[in-house]
Image 1 (tube, rainbow, N blue to C red):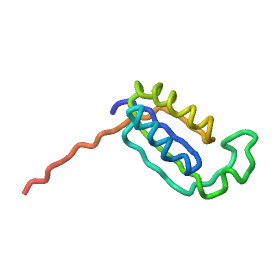
Image 2 (image 1 turned 90 degrees about the horizontal axis):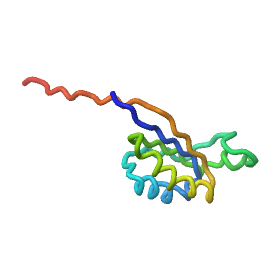
Image 3 (image 1 turned 60 degrees about the vertical axis):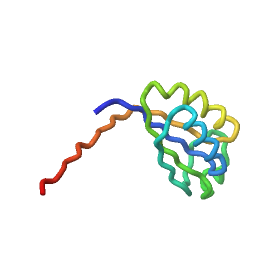
Image 4 (image 1 turned 135 degrees about the vertical axis):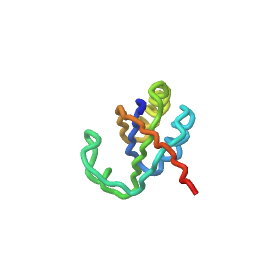
Amino acid sequence: MHPIKRIEIVANSFELSKILDGIKQAGVTGYIVIRNVAGQGFRENAEDLDMTMLDNVYLIAFCPPEKIKPTVEIIRPILNKFGGTCYISDAMEIRSVRCVASM
């Protein structure tokens, strides 16, 4: 096991390509995108319709701790300009051991 950072972003699907370009530029290569998410309470002073429309995406990415600062420096301006929210938390990666079956 080793420590990594978990990045979670909820944003409008129209901004997905900008966000993906940003995390790739920061060196984050692995991610998961879940489309058509809905929720409430992610942003202050936002109308309820903003997060209930099914044009939002939920992006989950993992990276080494040293890549968080460059990632935040790239992602923050995108989210500030176009909207969305980002959460970063600590996680542990468990690498599986591959077993070769005997024949």
